[in-house]
Length: 185
Image (cartoon, rainbow, N blue to C red; front, side, top):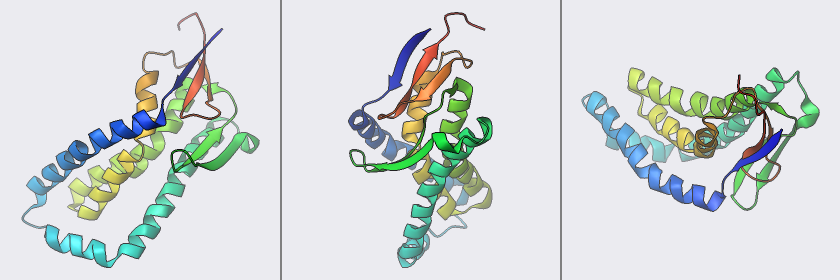
């Protein structure tokens, strides 16, 4: 059984995120505007955002915690509630919170744990914003989709690996170590 490290340099990922943030955000804001420009007053919406800044910061902090809890919930539910393998922290290097799971899991479970926060807090709110014409949900969804960029980047790097391989969350970097089976199923 061969081991393969799938991780990334956080500085490189930060630069990539900065390159993607403006086009990604602009794309969704322009589409939203083309659908809802008659019924949404964007200047007024931005004023409301400024007026409710403390509430927005509170929601933002709670959502960051929720993002990490969603990672944890997937691990716990799919790995028989192994709380002892779960830890949370804050990286001083990347200024970001993290959830670490120290038990080996199948790759498909790891992928699900990576995917859930970005979908639940990012993609779904973007979709709902288009359905409801809610500018705040759009901004929230964009922020938390971009906040899941590292997770999505690791998912991209994991494409092509057998989902039945076992992986372990990398102990000190974003990513994992794959224990590759030579036999494909």
